[in-house]
Image 1 (cartoon, helix red, strand yellow):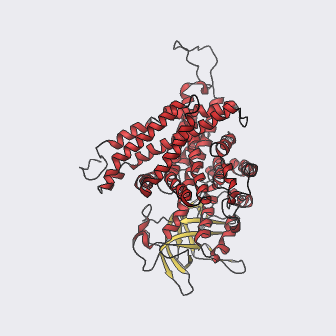
Image 2 (cartoon, rainbow, N blue to C red):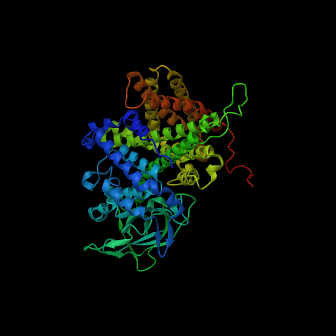
Image 3 (spheres, rainbow, N blue to C red):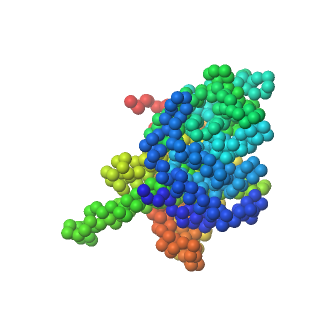
Length: 602
C-alpha cells in the first residue's frame, strides 16, 4: 500500500499558512514551541505507522460483529486505545489539571488527521471518548469528573454520546428515553438508543455513555431534554465494576467503516439502569451541543483524512501503471512506442489534481476552524466574540465540504484505477465505502446547510459573515502584492460579491416569514459558500508559497511550493466557477421542491 499522507503538506499548513506558533504567546500554550509540537506529531505518525495503518484492510475484512451480548472487534482497537492514552492523544487539548496536555486544538486535530488517514476505523473510538470526557469536565460534578475522566483519558474506558432512538433520528425533540428520579439523587434510565458509534466491545473495561433523556414531567420538545452519565458498569469504592443493566441489543452491519462498531443499546430492561444528571435539568441538548459541534468538525476532518489517503493511493498507482500512449500534436499515437504511465494522460492528471485541490483545501478549512477555536479560548472581550462567531460560522462548512467534496475526490481516485478501482484487491473501493457515511454522521448535509443559512449567516445581525469577509479581504490584499496572484485575488473578491447578492435575494423570504422557501435550497447555498471559503484557503496557501519562493525559504523544496500554487490555480479554474451556477439556481424564482404545488414526484 502507498503511504497515506504527506507530512510536509501538514507542516506547511500548520506552521506556515495558519502560523500555529502565534499561539505560544498566550499563557495557555506558553509551555509549547514548534519543536515540541513536531515531536508530538512525529510520535503520532510513528504510532499510526506501526499500530494503525497495517491493520486498515484487516478491520474491513473482519468487521465488528455482535456476539453473545457484546461486540467483537479487532484486538488492535483495545491496544490502540491504551497506546493513544499513553501518548496523551485522548486528553490532548484539555486542561492539565483535568489530565490533559493543554495542546492547541489545531495540533490535536492534526494528530487525529494523521491517525485517520492511516486507519479511519480506529480514531472514532478515541474521539468520542475524548468528547464525552470533555463534556463531563465542562458540566459534570466533581464526583463525576473524579470517577470517570481519568480512566477515559487513559484509554481504558470508552465513551459515547447516545442521542438517536428508533423513532427519533435528526428530530431529537421526539426522544422518549425516560429518567425517573430516586431518593439518593440518581435517576433510573429506561429506553433504547440506536446508531451508537463505539458503543461496546470486549477490549475496554467500561463504557461511559452520555445519554439524552426526559425527566418525568419535563416540558415537551427539546426544552425538556436532560443529559445523564450512564456507565455500562458501576464503579465500586474498591475499584470493582458491577453491571448497570446496560445491554447491547445488537449492532449494525455497515457499508463502510466496518471496524468501527455501531450499536443498539437498551437501558433499564432488567433490574434498572442508574444514571447521574449532568448539570441542570432540561439543559441536556445545550450541553450536548458542545460535544456535537466538536464531533462535526471531527467528521469533516475524518473525511479529509480518507480523501488524503485515497489521493496518495491513486497517485502511486498512476505513477506505476503503464497504459496507452501519449497523443501527439497531430492527433496520432506512435503504436510502436512503449506504453506510457497513466499519470502522463491529461485526464488522469485532471483527476489527480482535483483530488489534491479538494483534500488540501478541505484540510486547510478544518485547521482554520480549529485555529479559531484556539483563538476563542485565549482571547478576551471583542476579540473573543469575533472568534466565537467565526468558529460558529465555519463549523457547518468544515463538516460538510470535506464530507461531500471528499467523496467526489475519492470517486476520482477510484476512477484513476479504472476497473481495478472497483476490485477488492485494491484499497480505493474501501476508501469509497468508508467516506460515504461522513455526509450523514452528526447531522446530515441538509441539516448542516439549514444551520449555515438559517442560523449562522444571520447570527448577531450578520456579524459572523462580516468577520469572515474581513478575513478573506485580508488575504486578498496580501495576494495582490505578489505577481501572478492578482487575477486570483480579484476573482475571489468577485465571488464574495456573488454570495452577498444571493443573500440579498434570499433574506427577504425569511423577513416575510416564508422560511420553507428561504431554506428550500440551503444545500446549494452550502455548496456555494463553502466553495468560496475553500478558495480563500487556497489563496492563503498560494500567498504563503509565493512568499517562501521570494525569500528563498528552504523549509520545503521550490517544487513543493510551486505545487501549491498550481493546485490553487486548478481550484480556481475547475471548482470556483461552480459558485456562479449555484447562484443562478438560488436566485431562480421557481421553487420546485415545495409541497404547495401539484405533486409530481411519482
